[in-house]
Each structure stands twice: as C-alpha cells, then as structure tokens.
Image (cartoon, rainbow, N blue to C red; front, top):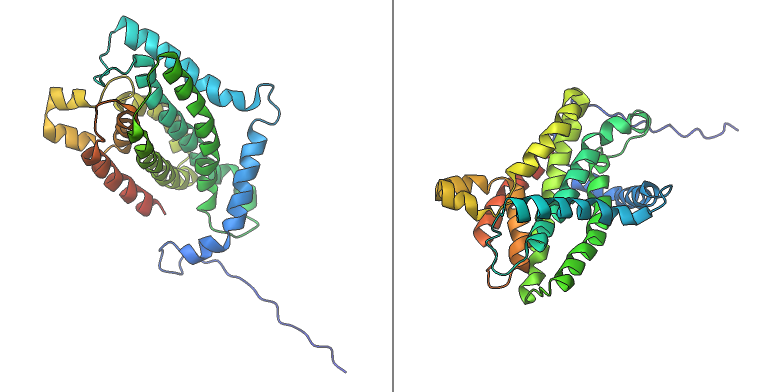
Length: 271
C-alpha cells in the first residue's frame, strides 16, 4: 500500500505582487507576536541596569531642570499659560518630546537591527517599527510621576479639562508610528538616514514649542504662518498637553485638528 504523501505548502513572497496597500487582516493575525515583542522590549531594556525604570524619570527630569534654569530664569521666557510655573510648562513639553524622540530613534533602526530575523521568517514588517512606539508608552506613563510631583510642589492643580490630555497623547503615538514607518524603510535603502536623524531630532525639538509657547509664532509671524506651523504634529501635541493642564485656557482644537490631519497623512503613507 502506497503511503499518502501530502504536498508541501510553499509561501512565495514577491515584492512585485499585490496591490501595495496595507493588509490589516494579515497584520491582525500577528497581533500576539506584536504583544510579546513589546513585552520583551519593555523587560529587556532596563533588565541589566541598577536604577531600572528610574531612568524613565531621570532623563526628562534632568532636561526640565536645565531648561527651567536657562529659559525660565536666565532668558525669562514667558509661558503665556496663566499662572503655570515654568518647570510645569517645560515638563508638559519634555515628557511627550522624550517619548517621541526615543520612539523615533528606535523605530528608525528597527528593520536594520532585525535583519537576521527578516531574512528567515515572514511576518508583516510594520511590526518592527511599531514595537518601540508601543513599548516606550511605559516610559511615558512613568514620567508622568514628574508632572504630578511638580504640580504638588508648586501647588498647581489643573481643572477637569485635564481629561482631554488623551487627545494629544493619541496624536504623539500616531506621529511617532508614522515617522517610524518612514524612517525605518528609508534607513534600509539609504543608511545615511540613520546618521541624519541623530542631528535632525535636536533641530526638530527647538523647532517645536518646547521652550516657548506656540502662540509666540502667531504674535510674531501672523495667522497664516501659525497655521502652517501647526502642520508640524508636535506643535499640536505640546500645545494640547499644556492647554489640558492649564487653568483658564481652552483646548487648542484648531491646532490639534491641523496637526492630526498632518499626522494621519504621514501615518497612512508610511504603511
């Protein structure tokens, strides 16, 4: 009797086939893999360090102290945020910026760093740049301890408007993921992008309203320039964080709308 021979199933991955559109169904099938890779990223990052997750507080706290001394005391930047102390004003920008910077740095090199896996096993490549974007949310959550501490120290208690902080929080995640998709793909083709990012990020930080209020652009350059400036998603992120915490200021919905539009375009085109 001849034994049954089952034909081998061969999966052929051809870059020329397909529509080139993002396959959400395929991505969702690998959601468990994404979860475990994010979990691994979180546990491995601080595993062999003495201070562990405390580094998620030390790094932004150091920047807040330096910025508060230089721009708050020496330069005398006016936060233009009512009674908000400059350290709190600075903290509300540095916390989301640190998350954005760390996520983008890790995402940009994710495909290159995982080349040994990519050449052997197939799964959606979008998972790699997405892992640091999600894992860095742990650091972001921990860094809110600084904001709570500064608020208590300066007796600055926000109103119920603080619940809207979720709006700029989602925006910074979309922005980080979108740019992460772009830079990770470009870094594979052109390794120069990896080096260019190291000096581009500091420039992007000072272009964002980290040390000054975004309304300064409106006052100095006018409404049209301000709307164009709002196309930079981190403008909406930082202003959203600050206004959600500010007393007597409404949420900058127009700025957030413009920044969201820009971030969504970056995200979709990066997939």
